[in-house]
Length: 203
Image (cartoon, rainbow, N blue to C red; front, side):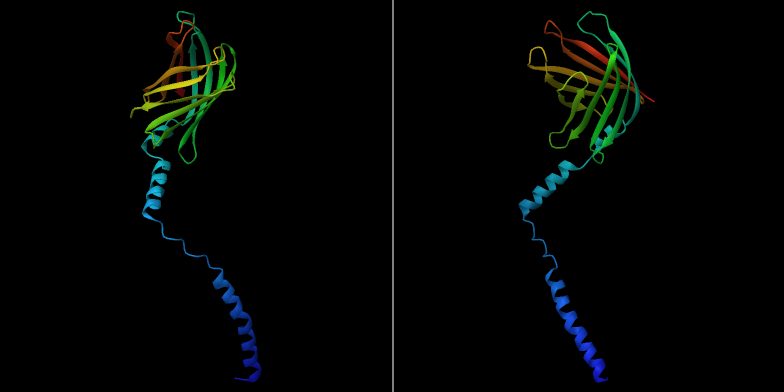
């Protein structure tokens, strides 16, 4: 090998070796081995956050609906009949169902927003509801069977008494595309009565 060629190779190596050393130094350190306690915690969080059969049942409700709304202001009072539409979709990678509702309430424009999910930790379904007639939120929880029939108990802050008001809700599917929702809450006399019924008809 000629001297000039040998010299060129040595010069190239003099630049390459420090570069390789720096690259070696920048390699990320291996993650420390998790303890048994840390592994158990990780498994618990993964289990709590993984969608399962209850979430799959919720996903079957996704779609567009026509609504027929009947409501009563007091026991024995004539009903108010309204119409509306609702859109349901799953978000957060199949963990939560969101409902957007548009329609009327006692003939006036009305919109609402609800969420429903299943908490793997508590083993219960949960729901929230906000609408254009309030700045508060109703939070509820309950149970559902394999056919989608549910019973929930929820509460919100009553604007008159300034205290929490509790209501009971029931849902049932009369066929594959029709859901009936009922809401029972205290009337003017403090006794619970059926104040609302909504029929959801999937388009």
